[in-house]
Image 1 (spheres, rainbow, N blue to C red):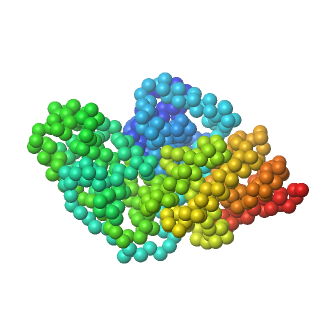
Image 2 (spheres, helix red, strand yellow):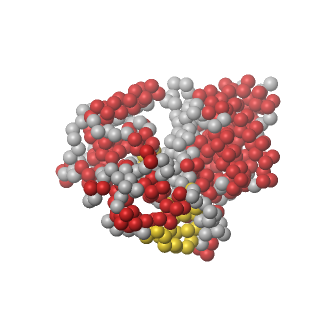
Image 3 (cartoon, one colour):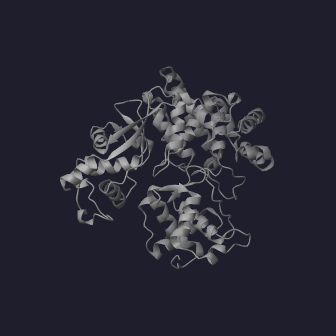
Length: 505
């Protein structure tokens, strides 16, 4: 049973939730984490049978609250529906003392009071599958559903037996891209966990398969197996002797703790080098949209890739798209308009910019498929085309104009669903960002000036739409990729702007 902790009951589960996620590799489904916590704490049948006043499992409710507070403390994020993922802070934090848990609780409570949020007892628990992304309260309900006919003949993957020594040589010659540009962390595992992987090879336990994008044979791109490859690099390839992995926390071969690869007996070195693995290689000629689906479905590493991280991995040609998105996401105008509130660690900021770019290049009236992933992917590819240089320059100008105008019109409430100054401040909303940024980017400077002069009218009209137009409210809250809802939010924002400009002198 969980050790008794001062404060609310759910605090008993905070450390177990964090530790469980670490043991599961840094990322797992909500259900898997909950079930593993229950198993870890060996809760009694009577305890598991307890329910809240509304009939919900009390234990699961408390685990939900633990996850909620960890997320508010920036230790856990939900990059996609039903998945809990540790942040760098979560990976590095040890809640091994009661005072640390109480400090976390008080810190989150202080944030609640500062922004006027309610605390436990009045704020509803998110469901286990709740997965609003950081900085965005409204989920698009991401799924793995395939929206278009899928031709299996286009999937070209070969399976290649390899030795660990061959992988180490590729790592040594920088022929495997561990992809720091994805914002994936290549060293999430602790030295204890890395050491146990090495021990597995020494006691001849087979390793899981690796997936690579081998389109460029001189530089394989990791799809799945990043942490295992990082461990091999750390133990066998690291050139700086002071940084090499020294074995620790071993279960069976404790006599070798403290040793580096070079310090192992030669027969143990050879056993590691000759360990056989299987690598699934995505071959040249595989369409990029097929590779995107493979990345999305196969990647199961310690930190599950977000959709934007996958795009960043796949659309590297010429660097046009990735460089433009990062440039605009780092621009002073964007950071000012969003109060630096959009997560950078998992490339959510780049996704926001991509949405502006996509709907600027393709008007919302031509959005017809309800497949936002495919829509955004196509525009990443389009930005890489050499012929789009002029378009990229125009997008830069329009984006910066839109960000400045949004800040001038709404101040700190830009892209947020806030009806009045006394209301609780809401997170930035993706759907509102799309509609307002594109609409403002399409105006000429004289129109912007006129609109800003009538900003009180703009805010009043917008608040009225949010509070009275249920169809618009739905269009920026749930199922936001739906064609009708995309058109509803864009056309409504356009109408507010046109009416305000028409009424202004």
